[in-house]
Length: 340
Image 1: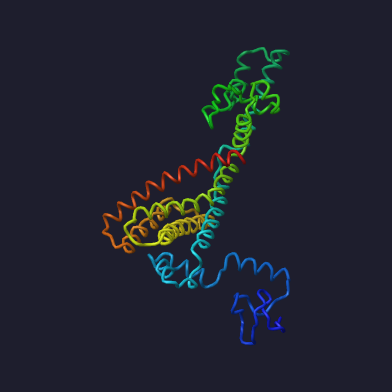
Image 2: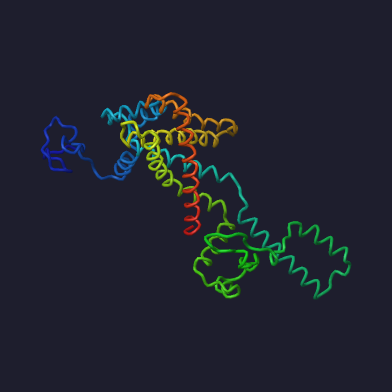
């Protein structure tokens, strides 16, 4: 529709007939009906902004330092904003990873429920045979035990969980697996004299995780999305310290780490995507080393240091990265355990 008043509907700036966009705020001079199609299309365009800048960014992210130098020189409309591009790569990667995990079966609730059911049937069989004595021959009893209760595990003697989490020593609690899966929470707390809120929460959450480990892992991985944003910010600070003698801005280090992450997530997103169609050989996942090699080349080219100094700094970068990633992963795992 034509804007007959020639006034920007967003900022009220005066327009003329030559303006396709408002010179003050950049909004389109023409306005459109608020149809569902327009609203959805506008939302997708605002979020992903899939124009030539997006595809140009995907192309040039593999060319060492090109995007960084363009950004520092002030040519910032040519590419998608680095943080937005990183966020899109993160969402794409973790979405594909989450779908890939659906084909990866851990010990699931079916296994736990089967163990509990087998345990109940075994004790029912023993109790019924002791009271009625329908089977007199011990050899027959042993045969039934051997062939019917193949995967039998006495959950009434099995400890629910071993070890210490968040200061809670499960060995000292002495929880029996069958009690955890059969008793109501209040009855369980009373039997084992559990009064601490932390202990109650941990028992409930560990039970949920053991019943559905696949879902709990996907939940934890989804929370790693913002974990990698934190890692990007902190690792840029660490890189700033490694190159403290160089007169460069923090944002330049931030972009180096940003591009490194984008390359990693794009490579694995492509591999996960292909894996949905055909099985990808495990050797192809070694392509994940390509961003590391590009990082070494980029740092050497950007800071003009020899290859040995650059490799040494990348090794230090990698060690700190691994430590930081471990800390954040453990933190997110504990947080996920608490709220899942």
